[in-house]
Length: 275
Length: 287
Image (cartoon, rainbow over the protein chains, first blue to last red):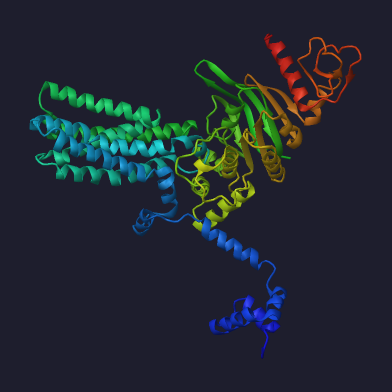
């Protein structure tokens, strides 16, 4: 060996002040020089290993963002909101529910009910389609219901948490159900006219969720809506539900329920028991 | 020393059932143990203090904020407390890190880097630093319990409320958790059935039963209530609250009239608790 790494070079190396060429030269030399490897202990900062290890740990323990996360980040969703939405599969599960319910609707309409007359096909579609977004929202609540006891005593706004989950569920559930409606032949205006009742039912579910747990809420809303459609169908056709007056009534009911939801949340907040 | 939390005439009623009768008590810095039988109202007491439950009557003040007065005060208090419930049902699919990270977001840790550092710190504190990527569903019962405690430690809260934190932990893990809790600054309130935890850790003990605090004092004061009332002898004391044959063949009796040739022994916290419970039951007319 014609040279050895002296103190000045060691200090510059450990402080990261050497240029890449000099750094590579030191590393190559030390690999083959026993005395310089021994000297390295004297110059390396005592906490270097700890610092390096902390960095390695930080890297390997940080959750790896999924493709969906990366896409949502690109779309401008905040990192902390994503943590809330993705916990317990609250983002993926409602998506899966929406697609599954939509698929069930398509199967029922296209295959299972092929032999039925168009009036009954419409009734089945109208009974099921508005429930897809409702179930998606309710399922996103159910995914994190077990954590209510932990969530309640945190400073995070529970209304914001509820709206985050709802929006995230609807963003996937509404287009998915609409897409299914588009591929089912012969639905006509029904392809979009399920949206108004769906809005009302979703808001009704949000109000009910402030009293009851997710499964009970889902059962209540599903029973109510299917019951309405069955009653309407037995007394005539479901076309009555698609008339402008009834559609407007659904929209008004939706607004009333939205106000009820905000009032209910505020009342809970005033009472100190918001969940 | 000013109180971290104060309850003034606080009660909780569900329908016609009163779970906590009007309680007035101050909780000051240090470790406070809450002892009581099942159904005594311990969990309701802790949930009231954690702001998870609104009281039916009375006023609760935490870190100077009257949490019963306004939502803003409640939020301010929540920024200063950590709460570990008796049972935590973890959502499926989360890893240990993701679970604590989720609660950290709810505790308003917005900056990702700082939040992740804090998550690693609390996982380290409870001895789960090497398991951040493990699914919660694959952790053992003791590890899950420690994970539940970890989320309560986020942000080094002024008031730490732990409901049965040592349940499901093996002796080594319990000792480790005691070491951790004893090193914390601030106020720690622990509900427990483990009287050894109380004697090992607590500066102060509250004994609660049927929603009423029956004892409020230090561990030596609690032990003093049982002084001279625990005996070791060849036979059980007459009318003893509890008796059992020890490994030496002698019978240890808590309370009652000692048998001939018995000697007085130092009481444990458990002895004192049993005697206190017996006195309460007598007062309440329960045999």
